[in-house]
Amino acid sequence: MLYKAVWDDGSIIDLPVGKAVCVGRNYVAHAQELNNPLPDEPLLFMKPSSSFQSFDSEIKLREDLGEHHYEAELVILIGSVVDRDTVCYSDAVAGVGLGLDFTLRNVQTRLKSQGLPWERAKAYDGSCALTPFTPVTKHHKLRDSEYRFWINGELKQRGDTSLMINSIEELMANITQVFSLYPGDIVMTGTPAGVGALTHGDKLQLQHNNGVKYSSTVMIT
Image (tube, rainbow, N blue to C red; front, side):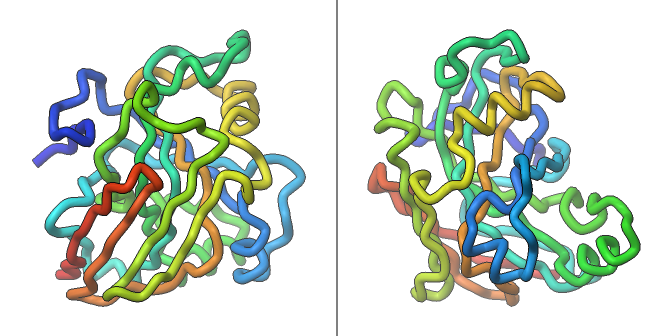
């Protein structure tokens, strides 16, 4: 089934399914845990719409691709065009959700060592699992967002926008100097420390500070 974004009340979001612009190393502790230097500017990469799947009862991943690592992130849904002439970036944000950026870490490490692009490790089918979105009109300020991620009941990651190297507005300003964002696009704002590998049958939970907790089970086949 093709992915379709939904609001947290279960209704379908009337926006096309766009691209994901992802931000690497936006938390100091995560860069340090992977022995990566801090970037001088936001580190950007993209995932296509074919990478999207819903964070619902099951998350399906391919065993033949290798070991899948999780990265929990705050996700911004774009509701109107954002380009380099935009003045108020927050006005273009339609919703806020959570997501898992899946990474084939061994593949990524090999590609990086060869100076090659990361797409095989980051942009494969199903590599972006997304929760429902909360409309920003019902949501607290973007500068005050906190979220948590558990595996099998154990807290693995805690993210907080106050700990980001670049704020959401700063990220959008930087991204749109390179390419525009369109309705239905998403921005994955970076992951905090605590990333690691998933195994078949893992029970996952994501919770935003809107109080809603989302649950899923990993199916690696």
